Length: 444
Ligand code: UDX
Image (tube, rainbow, N blue to C red; front, side, top):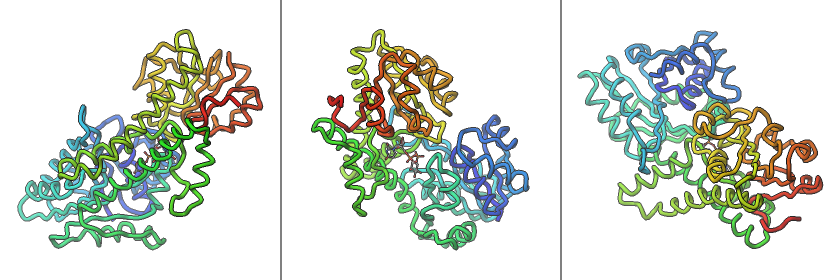
């Protein structure tokens, strides 16, 4: 089937490449010339394992092209995926829908044949219905446009796998009017559905809410375990053993119960805030006040990490702090609202000499936080350090041995912000090891 993907960021570039991989003819559309130039050359403008290969193969085999022309997009296909960003508004909790609105306004005026637009971006509930009305108003008379919602659940670092083999497909349609969207979606995802992926058909509002609820649940799960981690720290408990033990209960499950410096990235933090803001507009704000606490617990992890580091160094002035990790999670170069970079920034601004290293996120970190000092390697970052912080659980950090790094540092002190190191091994190597969610006064 022929289709366009409007917006080629993390979500759009991955969706475009994966739809071509499923055998469709895909045109990716973006207004950013530098992004387009890279994609046209078969290069992914960000780090995402496996995406480069899928992108290149499908460009070479003629199923995937890119353009900046909405005229070309309207002419090329009658099925369009909307995949532009919905960032948090400056100084407000709500989502900024200006990019989504701009796509609908531009495309609808240019469409000359009946078309279906599938929204994939995460939007406040009610947006799809509004966009549908707007599209029908702007379309040339007699041209039918339908807006349906097909939310995306991909995780950065696993984006290709999550798009080709998702846990479920959700399609929301306007149930008050005749809809072609279900049939078209079933055809697009035929291979995925026939391999057993559940297909959930809903109305527009439910589809939008499924995404908001999924992210709110995941954020809550992480903040839950981080809140219990605070209690463990006060009571001499061990959060990792506790998470393993409660995770054995199928009803709870072990996934997303890793305590540490908390969640970040371009989705969970802004999505829970936008969800609260939207519930407020709908008069249901009380229902989601708990998400404010989820957010507070999460942000508190960052300040607690800073305070713990200060204690370990005996004050920041004159102290050198080695920080391993800047990306918001491993297998990604994304530093948007990254707890790691936020902590590095706070410690630096409070007077310590901070050296940061990350295997993939150096360029993005420099752009976001140019005044930090960045090192070219783990060893360089650790040289003469008074304390070592591991803030993103990259494989190369997990496999470090206390002996290798012990020769570089001034004091053998490590704080494990992700509970990803083997504490016993580091202690046996002569280090003071502290993991969040374990008795913090305990130097065993
Ligand atoms: C998330 C959702 O998982 C995805 O379904 C949605 O579409 C977009 O938002 P992503 O932001 O790529 O995806 O990353 P995810 O793997 O969910 O991790 C989010 C954050 O939570 C990261 O900062 C990660 O380090 C943190 N996290 C995750 C924890 O602190 N503990 C955990 O146990 C799991």
